[in-house]
Amino acid sequence: MLYSFRRCPYAMRARMALAAAGIPVRLREVLLKGKPPALFEASAKATVPVLVLGDGTVLEESLEIMEWALEQNDPLHWAVNPIASSDWIASCDGEFKYWLDRYKYADRYPEHTAEQYRDSAESFIQRLESTLTTFAWVAGSQPTIADIALFPFVRQFAAVDAAWWQATSYAKTRRWLDHWVDSDLFTVVMQKYPRWHANMPEAIFPPPSTEES
Image 1 (cartoon, helix red, strand yellow):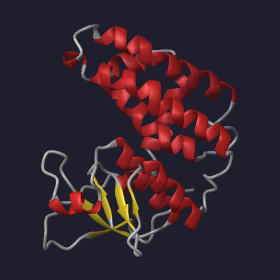
Image 2 (cartoon, rainbow, N blue to C red; image 1 turned 45 degrees about the vertical axis):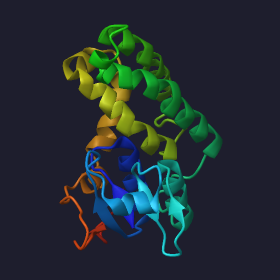
Image 3 (tube, rainbow, N blue to C red; image 1 turned 135 degrees about the vertical axis):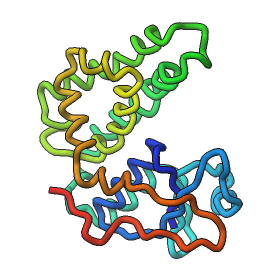
C-alpha cells in the first residue's frame, strides 16, 4: 500500500523505482492539506511517501522505498555504484534542498532575494553540470538510483524561473533532466489519480506493462 502525492518529489522518486522494478502496489493518493487518518495510523510522521508491505512493515522514507524496490527487482541496473550514488543523494537532500526551498518560496524567507537563494543552490547545479560533461549520468556511465533521486528536485529548480533556466549554460544538465522528464516511465509515474478516501478502492500502480529502455 503506497501513500503518495503526485507532485511531491520524494514520492516521485519512490514511484519511479517501484515502476522500474515492476512492483504493483495499491496507491492511495492523498492531499497534503487533508491527510486521511489511515496515513497517520500507518506512519506517525504522516509524510509521503509511505509504503506498507504485506507483512506490516512500514517504509517511511523515499530512499528506503527505492532501495527496497530495487532489491526485489532491478532490471535497469539502477543499484550499481552505491557509494557515488549515496554521496550525490546526500548533497541533493541536504544543502541543495535547503537552498531550493528558499528559492522556490523566497517570499517566506525575506532575509535574502530569490536570486541570492538561487545563487546558493547553483553550486550543486554547477557540480552536476561538470560531472555530466565528463560522464553521461550522475554516478558514471549508466543511470543509477542517484539520477532518479536527484532529477525531481532539479526539475523543481528549473521550474522556478523557466526562462532563466533555459538561458543558462547548463546544457548537459538540461539534456539530462529532459531525458527523465520526457521518459515513458515518468509519464506513467505522473498519471493523475483521484484523491483517496476511506471505503474507496485503491488504484493499482504501476500498470503491468510499464517498461523503460
